[in-house]
Image (cartoon, rainbow over the protein chains, first blue to last red):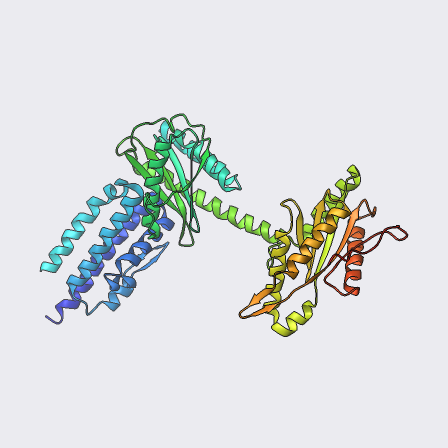
Length: 125
Length: 348
């Protein structure tokens, strides 16, 4: 049991890392790296009031990195990681809606929904 | 394919127009004039935030109702992006109307059904929001967003350059401490006024102002208080003058006032007004008050006909020197030797 927990954590963070990379790839094509980095930083800033572990996410104009989070969250519960990352994605979608209504989110649903389901399965394992 | 090329050409011309513009209104106008070729919209707007003030730039032909709706959309987005408590009901932006010369813009009487509002960001700070508005639902697609992002990015970038340029211009003509014009600008403007005066045979006066015992203020209260004294006197000088008079920091604790089309008599009255205003407004430093006074020297055309602006300044300086010599806190004016008028005004 003690061994499984960090593995689930790492898998979960890897999953969200790949999800954020896909979001980065698609959305940066639409609005540019600078504006996207600004929106992700803004969202992390707001969502981390509720989920402080999100402060470990690094954002630059080159992309998003969850490597520091991976190191810092070894002992966190998978549910907390899931809730925090899910909250971030949800709030990011809200930010996209604020600037472009459904234009960005429409492009992302097919990528995001399967990954969120996969994360839920991982938690209930 | 042809449509894509046409759109890219339009996009290219918009970006060129933005980059060719140096001031804010021109940047917005250059963008607004061409957008209707790219997007199916009824309005384009730019909401700018400067401190607590909001200004919205929109098309001249937009009805007040449309402007209100546009403002509501953009303020909501700005509030979301800045996290500030801005509600469309609580904030009334200053409306700047521009002529975008668009074919479709501003013609809608119906309600707005969709919009894209992108932030203009500089170093993590939101400068404002620029928006497209349509009276159709889901009017924008991914390509429209790509194009509009590029345009917004260029606008933000041009605005950044415009701000840098304007602050460089300020640095070139203003004194950084007092925000009065600097010596370099004074030289330029006085040359123009001097030539005008000589050519058109019209009056021109200058007043040289010097803070009395300034060194003692620095020694007694420190250089910070000395700087505050300079700022204080600068602000009193500005307050004593008309809008088109020019006041500059000449150097150290000396200032020069240039008053076009003003004879000696009028200039002496203004100089005396300045002297009284400084005398009557001590500088507060905590619980203490520092009483300041100034000495002033006036030189005027046509009381004298100097050959250069430098000679005019020298005459004012001579009068100032005389005011210092006669006990300070007074106004003296320069007259050419052997002129049969009294060379002093003791107006205290």
